[in-house]
Length: 170
Figure 1: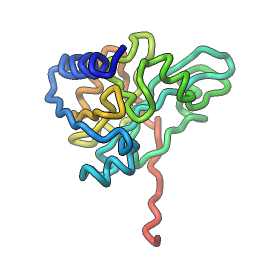
Figure 2 (figure 1 turned 30 degrees about the vertical axis):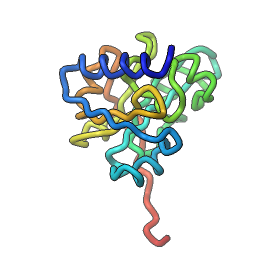
Figure 3 (figure 1 turned 90 degrees about the horizontal axis):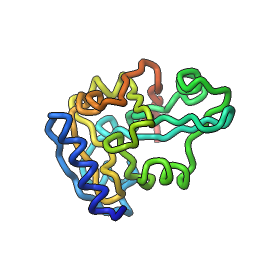
């Protein structure tokens, strides 16, 4: 699927939640969280990353986890237990692309295949507005977090991620 069609589909799914959706075009070279926030004036606590995880034992179990950029996914605790697997890791870029049709830096919970559950860290829901991927590295979507929770495959999960302590001494 070409980028324009992918993005149009993602936007349609996001708007289908009934919530306002802001489309933020960006330079694909600046799509990664830190560069995007710095360049486009968003804070890390407004940025929610969609991370695809995959089981290794047994193979074949996957989920898309939405966590704030200020948090670290609890992959070996909450994610592993919820997935029902003994070993879980971040899905590599090629597997993420194959499963979602999206590239890293643009993965979004909007428009994922229905068989991929979307787990949203409860702390995401505390923010009034979050920026998520738009399906490609050229687009981000700004939405209230309730739009994420409105997806059929979505579930809000407490403890999915933990805040990362910031070192202000640098």
